[in-house]
Each structure stands twice: as structure tokens, then as C-alpha cells.
Image (cartoon, rainbow, N blue to C red; front, top):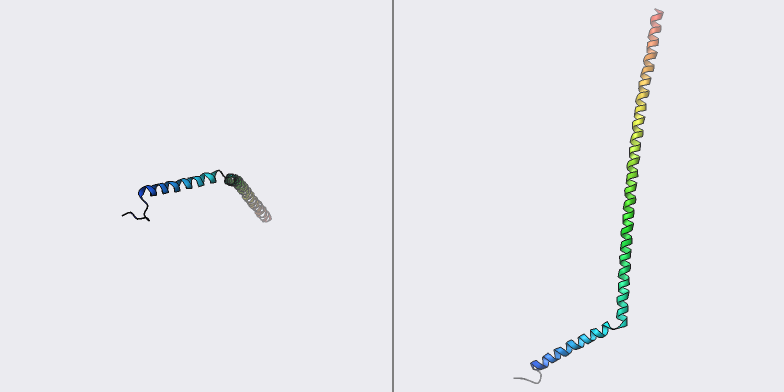
Length: 119
């Protein structure tokens, strides 16, 4: 039942082996090509540059975060200073009000004593 169009098993195996061998030779030839080596070198350089840029971005990010933390600390210090100033102002205002009340009482006492002296 073999026809001239159907190769036998041995012929199919040898054809497959020849095809594999041809493909392997093609890849070996391509890997020995200097242009391929140049492309690999260029790709490695691009990847290295990409990694360097990424590291630089990360370093810049750390610097920005440190600057923001420092700025936040400065803001907190300014808020603490403002609270101290407000407290001092409140104390001074209380002292002025107390002094004013004392002066008003003294003036009232003087008027009262003058009225008593007139009678």
C-alpha cells in the first residue's frame, strides 16, 4: 500500500533530522555573526544605562523625601515658635489687664477718699 507520494518511516526520520540540523546550523551561523554580537552589546549598554537612570531617579527621590522631611521639621519648629509667641502675648495681655484693673481701683480709691475728705 505504499505509494510513491508517501515516504516511508526511515525517509521521514531522515528528513526531520536534516531539517533539525539545518535549523541548528542556521542558528549557529547567526550566533557567530558579528552584527548579532554588536546588537547584544548595544542592548546590554542600553539596559545598563536604564539601570543607571533608575538608580539616579531613586537617589533623587530619596533626596526629595529628605528635603520634605526637613521642611516638615522646619514647619513644626515654626509652629512651636508661633505657639510660644502667642503664649507670651497672652501672658502680657493678662498682665496689662491686671495692671489696668489695679490702676482703675487705685483711681477709684483716690476719688472715694477725696469724697470722704470733702464731707
